[in-house]
Image (tube, helix red, strand yellow):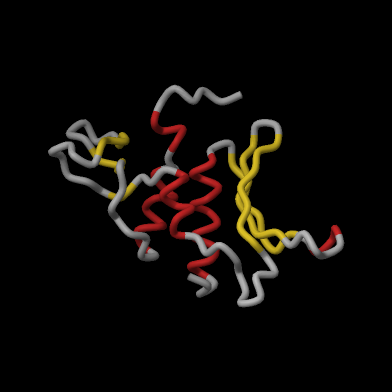
Length: 128
Protein backbone atom coordinates (compact mmCIF):
# COMPACT_ATOMS: atom_id res chain seq x y z
CA UNK A 1 0.00 0.00 0.00
CA UNK A 2 1.42 3.42 -0.92
CA UNK A 3 2.44 5.91 1.76
CA UNK A 4 -0.37 8.47 2.02
CA UNK A 5 1.36 10.73 4.54
CA UNK A 6 2.53 13.36 2.03
CA UNK A 7 0.46 15.75 -0.06
CA UNK A 8 2.11 14.37 -3.21
CA UNK A 9 -0.01 11.24 -2.73
CA UNK A 10 -3.19 13.33 -2.84
CA UNK A 11 -2.57 15.38 -6.00
CA UNK A 12 -1.76 14.35 -9.59
CA UNK A 13 1.85 14.06 -10.71
CA UNK A 14 3.70 17.13 -11.94
CA UNK A 15 3.59 15.84 -15.53
CA UNK A 16 -0.16 15.25 -15.37
CA UNK A 17 -0.78 18.69 -13.83
CA UNK A 18 1.29 20.37 -16.56
CA UNK A 19 -0.75 18.55 -19.21
CA UNK A 20 -3.99 19.62 -17.56
CA UNK A 21 -2.80 23.24 -17.55
CA UNK A 22 -1.92 23.01 -21.27
CA UNK A 23 -5.45 21.75 -21.96
CA UNK A 24 -7.10 24.57 -20.00
CA UNK A 25 -7.76 23.11 -16.56
CA UNK A 26 -8.65 25.95 -14.10
CA UNK A 27 -5.55 27.01 -12.18
CA UNK A 28 -7.34 27.80 -8.92
CA UNK A 29 -6.65 25.06 -6.39
CA UNK A 30 -5.77 24.59 -2.73
CA UNK A 31 -2.37 23.24 -3.83
CA UNK A 32 0.07 23.86 -6.66
CA UNK A 33 3.36 22.58 -8.07
CA UNK A 34 6.27 25.04 -7.80
CA UNK A 35 9.91 24.95 -8.86
CA UNK A 36 12.18 25.96 -6.02
CA UNK A 37 15.61 27.64 -6.18
CA UNK A 38 17.37 24.26 -6.11
CA UNK A 39 15.54 23.31 -9.35
CA UNK A 40 13.34 20.71 -7.69
CA UNK A 41 9.55 20.74 -7.83
CA UNK A 42 7.35 20.35 -4.77
CA UNK A 43 3.71 20.79 -3.88
CA UNK A 44 2.87 23.97 -1.97
CA UNK A 45 -0.21 25.69 -0.58
CA UNK A 46 -2.06 28.28 -2.63
CA UNK A 47 -1.31 31.10 -0.18
CA UNK A 48 2.49 30.59 -0.22
CA UNK A 49 4.47 33.51 -1.63
CA UNK A 50 6.39 31.61 -4.31
CA UNK A 51 5.85 31.37 -8.07
CA UNK A 52 3.28 28.73 -8.99
CA UNK A 53 3.89 26.52 -12.04
CA UNK A 54 0.54 24.74 -12.19
CA UNK A 55 -2.42 23.76 -10.05
CA UNK A 56 -2.14 20.48 -8.11
CA UNK A 57 -5.84 19.75 -7.53
CA UNK A 58 -7.24 17.27 -5.05
CA UNK A 59 -9.52 14.50 -6.33
CA UNK A 60 -12.56 16.40 -5.04
CA UNK A 61 -11.57 19.49 -7.05
CA UNK A 62 -11.13 17.45 -10.25
CA UNK A 63 -14.39 15.55 -9.75
CA UNK A 64 -16.20 18.90 -9.65
CA UNK A 65 -14.90 19.54 -13.19
CA UNK A 66 -16.09 16.18 -14.57
CA UNK A 67 -19.60 15.78 -15.99
CA UNK A 68 -21.99 13.66 -13.92
CA UNK A 69 -22.93 11.73 -17.05
CA UNK A 70 -21.55 11.41 -20.57
CA UNK A 71 -24.63 11.58 -22.77
CA UNK A 72 -27.93 13.46 -22.66
CA UNK A 73 -29.85 10.32 -21.63
CA UNK A 74 -27.45 9.78 -18.69
CA UNK A 75 -26.58 6.32 -19.94
CA UNK A 76 -23.03 6.46 -18.52
CA UNK A 77 -22.69 8.00 -15.07
CA UNK A 78 -19.53 9.07 -13.27
CA UNK A 79 -18.17 6.74 -10.62
CA UNK A 80 -15.12 6.54 -8.37
CA UNK A 81 -13.98 3.34 -6.75
CA UNK A 82 -11.10 1.44 -5.21
CA UNK A 83 -9.94 -2.10 -5.81
CA UNK A 84 -6.95 -3.47 -3.93
CA UNK A 85 -4.40 -0.61 -4.05
CA UNK A 86 -5.78 1.07 -7.15
CA UNK A 87 -8.36 3.84 -7.52
CA UNK A 88 -10.50 4.11 -10.62
CA UNK A 89 -12.58 6.88 -12.13
CA UNK A 90 -14.88 6.15 -15.03
CA UNK A 91 -18.31 6.16 -16.55
CA UNK A 92 -20.61 3.19 -15.92
CA UNK A 93 -23.99 1.98 -17.15
CA UNK A 94 -25.71 -0.35 -14.70
CA UNK A 95 -28.45 -1.19 -17.22
CA UNK A 96 -26.15 -2.76 -19.83
CA UNK A 97 -24.70 -6.23 -19.97
CA UNK A 98 -21.29 -6.73 -18.40
CA UNK A 99 -19.30 -6.23 -21.62
CA UNK A 100 -20.79 -2.78 -22.27
CA UNK A 101 -21.14 -1.39 -18.75
CA UNK A 102 -17.94 0.63 -18.74
CA UNK A 103 -17.58 3.45 -21.25
CA UNK A 104 -14.15 4.49 -20.00
CA UNK A 105 -12.04 3.93 -16.87
CA UNK A 106 -8.75 5.40 -15.63
CA UNK A 107 -6.69 3.71 -12.91
CA UNK A 108 -3.95 4.86 -10.51
CA UNK A 109 -2.69 4.26 -6.98
CA UNK A 110 -3.61 7.94 -6.44
CA UNK A 111 -7.30 8.96 -6.68
CA UNK A 112 -6.41 12.45 -7.94
CA UNK A 113 -4.23 11.01 -10.70
CA UNK A 114 -7.05 8.72 -11.86
CA UNK A 115 -9.51 11.64 -11.89
CA UNK A 116 -6.98 13.85 -13.71
CA UNK A 117 -6.39 11.20 -16.39
CA UNK A 118 -10.16 11.04 -16.96
CA UNK A 119 -10.34 14.86 -17.22
CA UNK A 120 -7.51 14.82 -19.79
CA UNK A 121 -9.22 12.07 -21.81
CA UNK A 122 -12.56 13.91 -21.88
CA UNK A 123 -10.91 17.22 -22.75
CA UNK A 124 -8.95 15.67 -25.63
CA UNK A 125 -12.16 14.11 -26.97
CA UNK A 126 -13.99 17.45 -26.78
CA UNK A 127 -16.48 16.17 -24.21
CA UNK A 128 -15.75 18.91 -21.66
